[in-house]
Image (cartoon, rainbow, N blue to C red; front, side):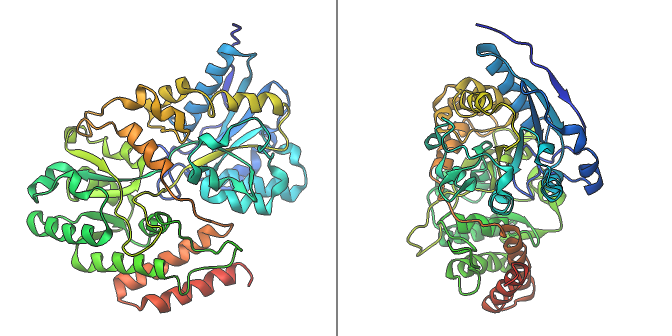
Length: 446
């Protein structure tokens, strides 16, 4: 066994994320300026073929993971050096656009991390950035299907799935007990059942069952994906106006805001505070929200995790969904693609030892074999002795995939505005959905 010394250099230090991973609202993409992004491009150019140049964010999560993967790989194989440039997700996307505009793809790193919901947009708009990984030797069938779908374009695998954004229903079991419920009463149920039980909790404890950041449609997106529904048709056209599933989701949300079982808060700080100060009974979000929940150590033993409610009367409805997450990209400028293919094949797509280690950082696998290891079977004292890690991996494998499309964030923002108008001003859902459809089509140039 050969052991190489791994060289890891942090080229820049920028914004830390709010939580371990997640989507645009869940942290992980941070913030930064375009000028910062452009000015450091030249410093990050790949050179030595044995040095893997990586762009990613979050030293406690993503950077830790890529460093650990390189360390484990170098223990068993001819090693590789890893040189990391830390930068927010938004800056990575800005750099990619700038580099493509310049026409000089030699400015690309070997590998970068990309938000799942941005993946389709960048592959379709800038295909020359990406390396097709379909024949790389990586077994993509071992990843959760819904996760792999984010980086699959026209049947070709363009990214390696990484962190788990499986949605969880994270509940205060002591508050449920005050209302006469247990966690089992909220497992495998429908939204209509959930809404009735939420009213009982409100009546007996005075607490809402959920707090939600006003204007952020995360929960609507999770409800939609739980039955494989999308804001776009498979041909890329907008599917907001006349979308019966979206309408049902918006009506559930606005009804719960009206009866006080959902409390809208101003920003993410208020949302996190509500979880930590005991002013809400539960939250529904990507599993990365656990990092914020467990921050309040004196609540250990008073939380439990179960699955989401499913929509009533929808044929493909499930109790599983996703919110947030990211995947690795091997660029067309990668100097030693065979070595990098082998690196990912034996770490992110092939090592339970790797996933057993990074679980300490809250990084849960979407690579199904990891969920069967002893580390994932460990019970969590904070969550009442539940085997939460294996449970969440199981949730991820059951999550339906849906089509996000290159204009995902345009559609999401438009639905957020429509949702606010319906929930806060009593606007007509169908009229708001029509307006949202027009706004997205305008942005698409239709």
